[in-house]
Length: 229
Image 1 (cartoon, rainbow, N blue to C red):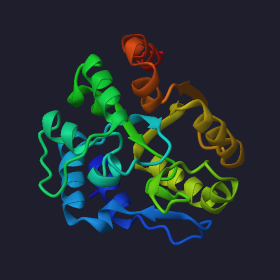
Image 2 (tube, helix red, strand yellow):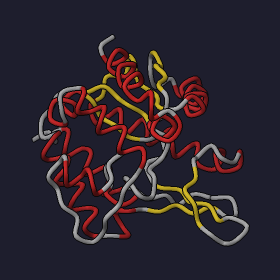
Image 3 (cartoon, rainbow, N blue to C red):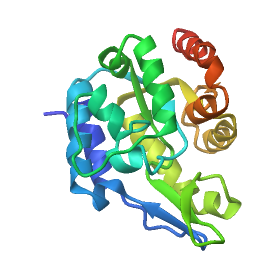
């Protein structure tokens, strides 16, 4: 029997492991290995919203934030919205992530989680959280493109991850890329690996929520317009 969409995503996440090089001062966090409840919450989410064989459109983030998917295992979803919107509770953690606020406001404007997730799949080219150590010894979120050496180290893993995402059951004729800087790097990967057709670039949820919150509705409308093209 062929695995459905949910089972393919769950299998991908179960096997996730990065064993490649990293520049000094960077670390990769795997939420599925760090917290058993993350694996359970992630499985509940995908069985709830993706338990079918429907082809979906791909929304590409950067890499998971340590307070969002770095805890829940679900892109742009902190524990607050996982419970409040999706009805899935995590007892071992409570997180609030800025990006998650915008994404779930946008999802609500699109008709709610059930309808949205039936149409779209969100993930990242580097599907694990990255952190970097500051000069004071504190660890902060990092993006895969923050350092040229980091990008070079993870590039091959990112291409293979994107190929695996495509194999789950995605429409590759046109994909949505979140963040203009992210889009530049996805364009490079796409030129090399010929993964997608058209790249449609949208402002990143964190940027909108943090710097353009007064104009949030305009950006939600922009997302919806792009999705309906």
